[in-house]
Image (cartoon, rainbow, N blue to C red; front, side, top):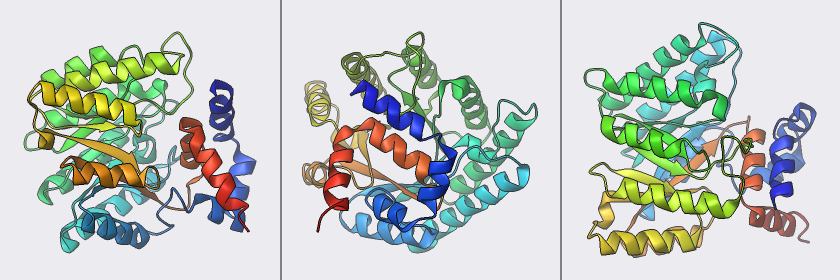
Amino acid sequence: MPLLRSAFIALSHNRPLRRFFEHSALGTRLNARFIAGMQPEDALRVTEALNRQGISVTLDSLGESVTSPTEAHRAADVYHRLLDSITERGLEANISVKLTQMGLNTEIEESPSLAESIAENLVEHARSAQSFVRIDMEDSRLTQDTLDIVRRVHSHSGLRGAVGIVIQAYLYRSQADIEQLLADGIRVRLCKGAYKEPPEIAFPRKSAVDRNFLKLACMLIESPIHHALATHDEAIIDTIKRHASACSIDRSHFEFQMLYGVRRDLQRKLVREGYKVRVYVPFGSEWYPYFMRRLAERPANVVFLARNLFRS
């Protein structure tokens, strides 16, 4: 399985394959399971359907590593329109944003300030719309910049509680990062991690990542802040549920998050049991890197796609 994961992560960076799949009928057939559609309206319709099932949503306009301020502002405009639509339609939804889509680029000296300015504007809009912005975590080269930007934005007057961050359990540093974020009062979405990282900075074995995820999840739900635990692993979810019950932690105090198109049965089961569930709903034409990372994360997704792709 580690070889399969590495292969799909490598393929996520293959530009010729990306161009082919993002502009082909085969690509459209492949992505339909995990991508809500190409346009914001597609994602908003999916959001309405999920809300009717008692499931909240976080919306992700796909795209990363923009190369100019113009592209960064264009990407941000999509999110501003989403925030307006969330308010107008009364949706139970927020937004998830990648800072590389907002202009963060380690090779351009002024890029952190551009990304921070754009992110701050989005958080201000979300605050006025009584919504929320989650800043996604990307590969480890950007971990510290992402943490620094989120902490600065969160510290601004009036923005406390309107911005959160993602922490990846496979990084050794994550416990220390969570301790600092809890001290700052910043909401966390905990996930396992979807990028290929060297063993010097990340747990190389799934079993170790799972153990760290559980340890960090318990830290989060025991804190006074509302956090999100992103996993499709039913054994891990059951362990978290037992821990919460043993510690008399109310089911409304945290939420489980899952990806659009993955474990729909488990999403509905958790809602019936009274847990909060939020689904990460991506959309947009630049779907290929996201799609390949989903295959890398969960080999069962590969089997599912193969069965459906070649079904007569």
